Image (cartoon, rainbow, N blue to C red; front, side):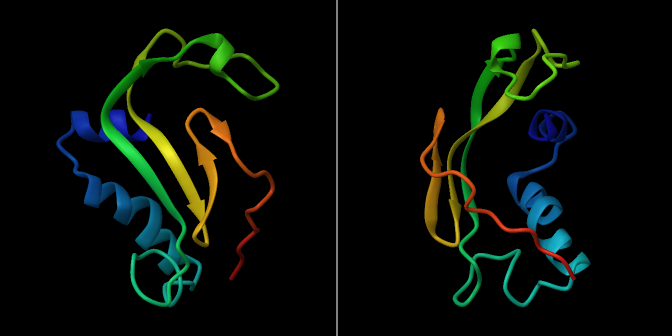
Length: 106
C-alpha cells in the first residue's frame, strides 16, 4: 500500500528506501550496520517489482482477521524476494525459511 500511495504522489524507490530503511535505522541508533547497502552492513534486502500490480483478495490476507480496507483494490509493487543478513527467507509467493528475523531495540 505504501508504494501505491507513494508513486501516486511522485515519490521514488530511493524515497521508499530512505523512509523504510535509512530513517528507521537512524531512529533506533543502528545506522552503523543497518539502513544502507554497503560493505559491513547487514544484508537485509527486498527485491521489489515496482511495476507489477495485483488486486487484493480476501484469501490473500494471512492474518487472523480477514478484514482489510484494501480488498478489491489494485496495489502496485510486488515483493519477489526477501533476504535477512544475506539469507533468502522469501521467494514469491512463499516463505523459504521462517522465524529468521530478530527484534531490534536501541
